[in-house]
Length: 239
Image (tube, rainbow, N blue to C red; front, side, top):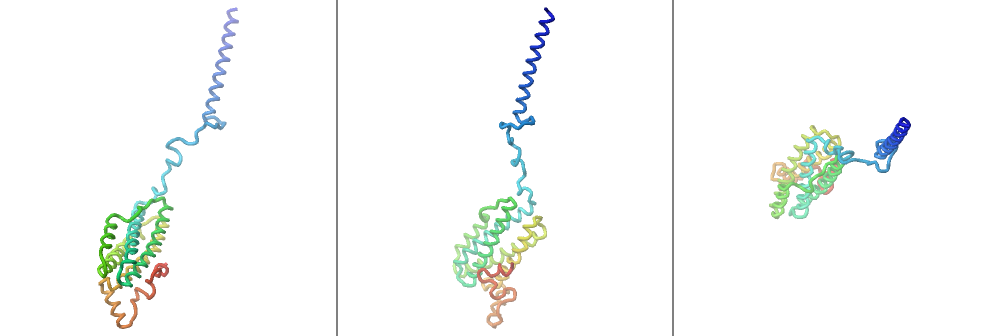
């Protein structure tokens, strides 16, 4: 009798243990750890998946990123200054030159924005504060003084800085798309500089030589072919 009671108790304990084990196994599969999928299994966890994937912009070389940001700021400055001069300049030649700059820099800026987007970079919404101050100071000038300030500071000085920066970047940048944009834009900047240097408002030897050739009926300088710097001209001929 005693042995029978012990055997019955052992049987009941074994059955209870089996039931508990089966329930534990079912719960484990329901949490997504078993071979069967579960509707309650989490798809992602915080801190995993794309949130931990480095952005494409983070993979851009630091020098490439700096050049893109600087070129964008300079391009926006020259565009805004040119838009101002295209309406405010008193000399027709300066107005035409400014309209050309506005056209070309607008196109180049748009291309750079698209390039930056493709690389995952966010560009500033406008030129740097110092550049905005320069445009504000330029806007306060009038007549011949305005024309001279625009040609010398934007047409010559700013483009000299651009060309130097672009020539250095052409040797240093890593991103092929950026290098292609530099190769396309640099010749246009060089033409802008040559055209500004040949304007009378430049006060340079090149401008004096151009005026002298005009008086003698020799035509424009070889560095600024006739028809190249009318609105919309230089960019297409350079490309």
